[in-house]
Image (cartoon, rainbow, N blue to C red; front, side, top):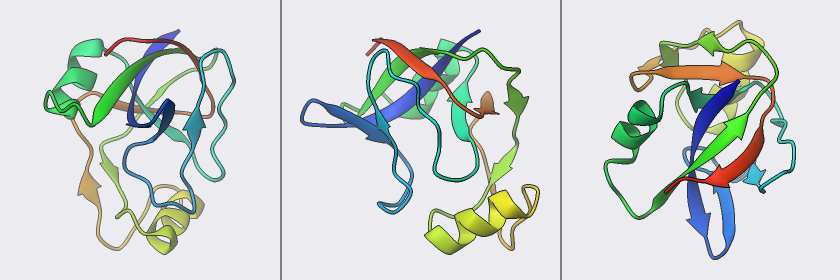
Length: 117
C-alpha cells in the first residue's frame, strides 16, 4: 500500500518532522524504516499530507510503501520523550492528548520510494 510521510529536510537528509532528537528517525529512499518505539505517523492520501505541510519549505513529502494494514489514529501525545513513551506503552493513552491532523494513520514500518515535494 502507498502512504505519504511528511518529513523535515536537513541538508540532504530527511528526518521525523515532529519528534524530539532522542526518537527522531532518518528516512532514506529504498531503505526500510522502523521506529525506535511505537509506530510511524503517515497519511493515506497525498492531499492530507499537503494540508499538514502548510506549503512550508521546511517540510518534504515522501511517497512510501508499507506491506501492512494501516491503522487510523485520531490523537497523539505531546512531543517530549516521556509523553511519547507513555503513549505507545499505554495503548495510545496519555494525560494530555492532542488531535492528529486530518487523514492521519500509523504503520509499524515503511520504505520511502520517492520524494514528492
